[in-house]
Length: 417
Ligand code: SF4
Image (cartoon, rainbow, N blue to C red; front, side):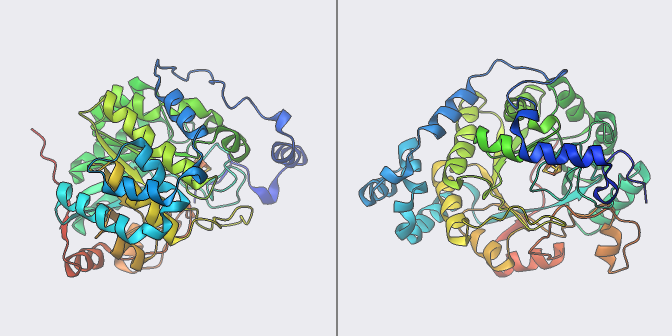
């Protein structure tokens, strides 16, 4: 096991480090300005952020009525006002009707297909202090970064299971997982998979271009919450603290040539209705600016993590999640929607028939344990997991369950020319 020397081991924190952690948590004046770019961060000229944040700030979901929801459901195309009504508490009694409409839109644009992919964590070092995440730099977990040989071994195991699309993830550490390291991993992934996604720390346009040249097709970045004040209280240290740089990541990825971009708020961190509105509008405005790009949304809720009881997703239950997903589908009919293994099997089986178009399978959020998990062996020297998953179905089990549910599983539909 690689020794966790760069990152802080909470059991061995020096007095100074402990004091710094305490001050960061309790005294906002010692934190850096989260709206100020750090050295080396590219600033792009874009009006998307302003449009999204001002729409979110002025969204008063309490003013929407039953009549507004009924009107929204009658319209053939859903505009922003309709979407706001569908996200509001007034829409809750109309969930069945929303689900029917969402299902119709999904069938219209995706037939009965459902895409299957798997994530591969190649490192779990992270320089940020996000208080809700198991990988944060103050958390005492086993850290690991896979070597090129280990990455290839993991990929072979995954590819042998039949999976053709992979999403590669790292913690967010430029010093431990630099862009060249990720690029080399992309080159390997391109050998084994037809579709390669990345969920890494946000980078500059030229770096996205390099990663695309190495084989990456799409980039997903979670904004976590679009509420900048709340964001400031959750991301206490590291480059992730810079709210606007993170916000523009997808646009930089598009400018760098990526074929697709993914978006998400982590529901439960802040007011989930406002975060859902902002996430969808982020897609909506970029879709108008760059119509040739593939867009996708995911809808994760907070999950329990090792050594952290500070934060809990109390207000986003499955009913609320279902409402958000149906509203997304009705507002953005041809955007891909992913539902991750954070959600339980019964929920995922149901929502893929209504609004979602993509599911993960054969998931491990630990580092370097696919071989043991896929072959049912004991795991040696794996890095700790980011969070607990709820649905641990293998690729085969997921494939069969999707077929049993009347859906057509798709492993890849992209042909390189
Ligand atoms: S959420 Fe991402 S950036 Fe934050 S601590 Fe976890 S891995 Fe690091």
